[in-house]
Amino acid sequence: MSEALLTVKNLSVDFHTARGTVHAVRNVSWSVSRGETLAILGESGSGKSVSANAIMNLLDSPPAEIVSGEILYDGKDLLKISQEEHRALNGKKIAMIFQDPLGHLNPVYSVGWQIVEMMTAHGRPHDLAHKRALELIARVGIPEPEKAMRKYPHQFSGGQRQRLMIAMALMLKPDILIADEPTTALDVTIQAEVLALLKELQAETDMALVLITHDLGVVAEIADRIVVMNEGEIVESGTVREVYHEAKHPYTRKLIAAAPGKGEIKIPNRSSPILLSVEKLSKSYHSFHALRDASFTVARAQSLAIVGESGSGKSTLARTLLRLETADSGHVYWKGKDLLTMSARELLGVRREIQMVFQDPTQSLNPRMSVYELIAEGWDIHKLMPARQERRARVIELLEQVGLIAEHIDRYPHQFSGGQRQRIAIARALALEPELIICDEAVSALDVSIQAQVIALLDSLRQRLGISFIFIAHDLGVVRDFADTVIVMKAGEIVEMGPTAQIFEAPREPYTKKLLASNLDPDPDVQAKRRAMGIYA
View 1 (cartoon, rainbow, N blue to C red):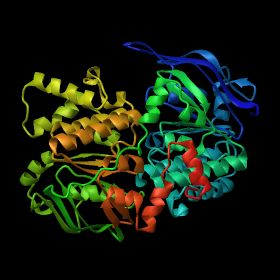
View 2: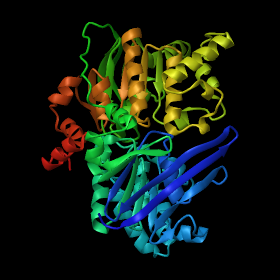
View 3: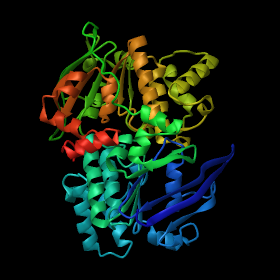
View 4: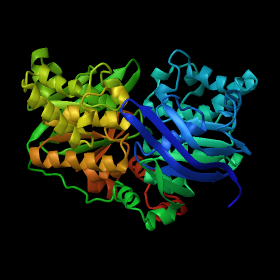
């Protein structure tokens, strides 16, 4: 191995809170060399992002305190240099892609201005910066780069915003790129393209890549070495192959066992009664056809997955079903009655029976309401469960079902990670015991073990209570494990539909085959074979 470009030695970080001191990172040591990719694997709260923020000098102090350690780059300890020296390094020599792009893009400036400013702030000419920005925006898969440069962050999807953050981070060709969950919001084909782009740029510039992730498929595809973190400590390290096939620590083995896509494929029950029937549903925005003549049915206790790239119409379909968007034409029959022509009073009753878990919990959870108030709100609207003590007990039960604890009941959304907020949103949907739940990327932000736990919970509810699911997802491994029927969408149209086994084992459409080929396997040996055969590029 070549000489280390960045070395973290015995790093410990504490957070001093009203509830006492939290040892977020404890004696963590690792290094990464030029041209190498190091993956840091672990669940939320394991200390991955805290370590990265310490490198970038982005920890808020207080409450954070770096207790001990060294972070060595180019012979300098980054913990001992001045704020000015840090500002000169950040972005130019060490860049970072953040997990939450909306929280790191300024909503009042165009994305083009923000990306260009990354270069001009470090003394590059504006013309050169503009040209470089256009090149990178195109390379990360954003259509019409010139037009995109003039748009604002809210005008892009979550996946597109993440791609823009990647473009911004790569503007100055840094020596080290720290990527914090860079592909979480991306569909499989864009994920494949972004990972290929990162590898391509790494080969061009000999850049070191530190990849913070919970996705074993991404690790198998791009990483050279891996460190596994749990509760602030490194519990295992080695090559990707060593860790995957010869894991020694129980926590590592738990993560590997929870990786999706290895379960038994479910078979649809053809005898179940139809709950929802969609006929020729269409929706346009001016000249853009977001949804064209979508037709399908959902039976009781069915798990129907909808897959496709960003912009294929998946979320538009879900929102139109619930009348959160107004359809241009078509019918949506719920138990024989057309949802699209119901009165407001009729619709209120149906809204208890059909719940939705949105893709972005930050936007769907009221920041002024506690967890208890958020989950109990539906009971107030529908005049259910008046006894407060009974309510609190039920809220705690729901929280525990989604992997949270009773102590979380009186906290507010901002006090939780993105994955934890999504679990709260799922608990809120379950509170009304609906007959159909529409999940729009509901598990994409969750750690693999929590994801497996939530999927198992949803499946048990499907079997025990007969709840049906429309499950929108870009993670095909999760779809394979959960769904009994799959709809494939492209450019607003359903291009293929069938039982999960048929879609995954004998797809008919080239587009479906492309999606499946882009899906990453957590086993590095399997992924290496796929690359060698040209199945994934």
